Image 1 (tube, rainbow, N blue to C red):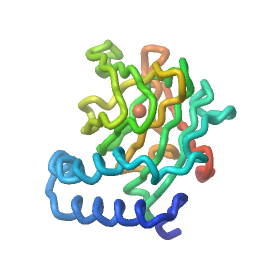
Image 2: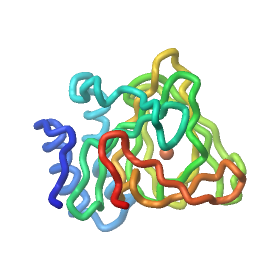
Image 3: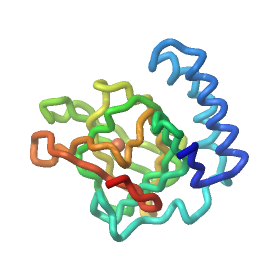
Image 4: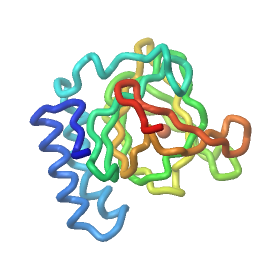
Length: 191
Ligand SMILES: [Fe+2]
């Protein structure tokens, strides 16, 4: 399987090309995240690139609560994915990890985010507005949950260096790590 563009537009292709070039030019995840920041901010500020169909909740959610995880791009070796996470008003994700570094930012709506340490103790709470984004550099900030606080669904954009929807990661709602695979709304995972 080659590169998969579920949203095949010049904006997404140019973005992925620039991100790959930036990653290739840096020697650490932290440096790569810094290098990608300007392009990521540009994508979050562009009101037109993400079609409405990728901003819809999913009643059959693998995460529950009608949460939709829409794959937009996945690299051939699954080392890089771009996806939109849609969380309906009042819904909360499980407490979960990602197991990969990258950038996560809010595109639409508002969210409260709670960050946990590996003992599943709450360490930080922050409110997010459209355009806000942060770097995930596991283990730092890797375990969290988000809740939509706006009257409309929230849409966050994730650029992460694994196949986040299909890898087995963890949910922590029970207070300890449990196997968790969120899936994507629009692409099946391999059996
Ligand atoms: Fe997350």
